[in-house]
Image 1 (cartoon, rainbow, N blue to C red):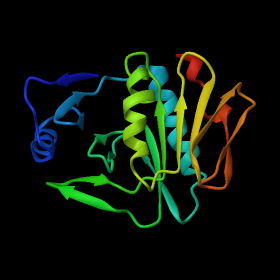
Image 2 (cartoon, rainbow, N blue to C red):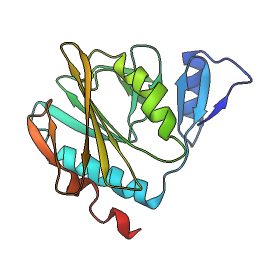
Image 3 (cartoon, rainbow, N blue to C red):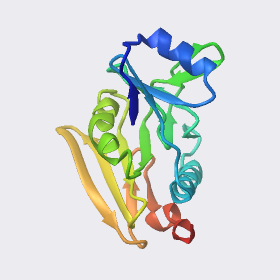
Image 4 (tube, helix red, strand yellow):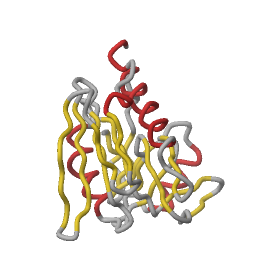
Length: 188
């Protein structure tokens, strides 16, 4: 992630910057972060992930693609690769754009350039939001899904390796086949 650090921006300046830009940017602690483009494999996995989640959300929830910005309780603004919101949407609007604040499940496809940030600082931002119950991190180079979920005592995690694995999505009460996330991903 490349940050525009030569200047401290407030949230309003970031939102104005985003409205005027053709690209998307993330925001944290006064810095505007340029998002890197995804590889064909990254985009394949992200698309399959959205489709798999959308087929399982039921009537009380809805799935979103990477075009939807989220705002965390600690003040970060990001674009997860896919997410689920259960219940009524809690939005803030700015000049035709909207930020979701009550995301329930986040899915990030890990890229070599963003892996450390996604698993570290970005995960901490997500965890600051009480609505978040689960996070999935999907690797692009190997079949490997890290599932992180909120418990009554904090957070737990488990890795799912292999195409035959099923990830139990507690929020939705369903099992997500890892094979669906990786369908045709290694052809590109």
